[in-house]
Length: 357
Image 1 (cartoon, one colour):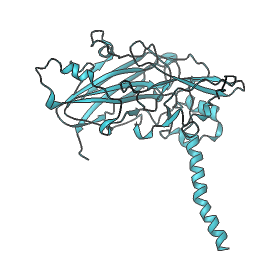
Image 2 (cartoon, one colour):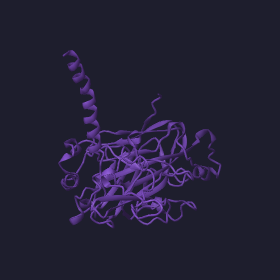
Image 3 (cartoon, one colour):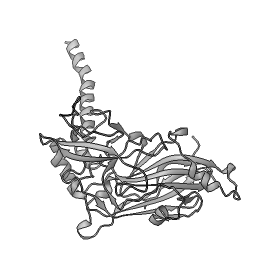
Image 4 (tube, helix red, strand yellow):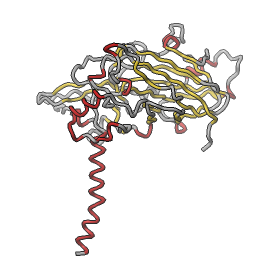
């Protein structure tokens, strides 16, 4: 009898683990625009503002406390810059991986279609990160200058908001928005001379293909707890009643794309190409295409009253980042009912003295 009890007792942790695994599978399954593969989000605006303690620049040479779209796309910016601001956006995804050429974040545009059986399937192709990109996502170089070591914080007014009117209002696409900061290098204050005309070019030339000194690609997810009624309806219509109820309030787990996902072709020779089902868009089920990004993620609530740490520390001197703004297709708020939005990105940053570990 005692052995039987012991077996029952030992099964409890296993059962708990299975239930937890099932729950993680449920809440980490998301979808993209499904009904119209050409649907896009039109019109976006970008505002970047620095508080006291540091300055901002798009060229490492001319410094301001407020930057707007014109500063990013200004034709008089340094030659060969690869800044681009999307006028129309479509869903992309990333696992915060860097390319081997210049350390840029690899972004993948997803496409949902149907296979002959009527199942929704996903394919993806890497985007081109330069100013010739039309639509898609926004990316630009951003330089910080500070005299002291500081930690960066997101002010309560920082976020992505809906600015649509009429039929464009209240669609909720802002809830699928992301911002990434990819560290590119530091020009230490000790090596900077105010009379040296090459400081700007030195700052612009910085790039890294790795994450040195613990500097990661940081992904910020604003509005992580916000979902419209239509988005909630969509997720239940696609995935059914098996969706966990906590998906309605908690920041959701998801896995980003880090490699091209080929379009399925069972007739391909010599090797057929299997379809990637939309319901299988996780690292657990498809580790060749998807990767968990939780370690690099900063999630903030839509309604905030105090600053949130961005987990980025700036050292004295000029620090260069590559900044990305996009709609995360793996986020379940990136749904058909949210297409046709107008959204505004407000990147309001503040500084606090760096905390020594």
